[in-house]
Length: 206
Image 1 (tube, rainbow, N blue to C red):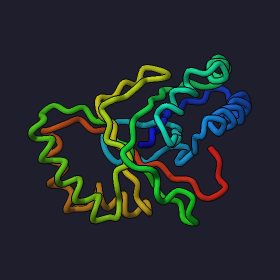
Image 2: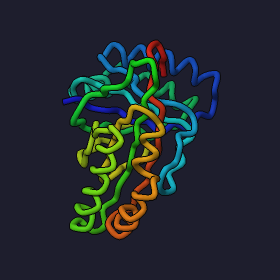
Image 3: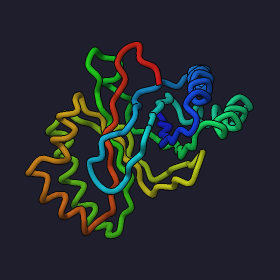
């Protein structure tokens, strides 16, 4: 099963960040990672999460992601990053690899950070979400409560990554009028922060 590295990024020195980013891309490639989504000002769908910039990297195996994080090359990059950006970064286990990334049209990923307050109610809420995802040709890439924080203070209880062919389908799944009743049930079940992030087109880099 794949693993996903998700980063919430705040750049403080753009010139130095560009230099860091080139080295980080090379490091990810050496450990068989693929940049699958990223960009500035992800679209907020729910909650109060407002990351100024994000990226998502897919690894074929969790072991590859951990090998990169534990490498001397990455540790040197951490020092360099301290001069240009603040990262909150996690690794989560996936349930499926990306399907749409690399096609002519850019897919989108919906990423949710969830804190469950009522598990029976959340289980019912998930049924409505699952249906909306299926109806809009989406699928789950990760539903993970085994989260490893590798930078910063981000320590989510449950991370969900959903992939959709288009932004319109992602928004319809989570904002359509038929979803409102599901959302209301969710308010009694969990605290959810969700953003939509653009996927990569062929040849795009992070």
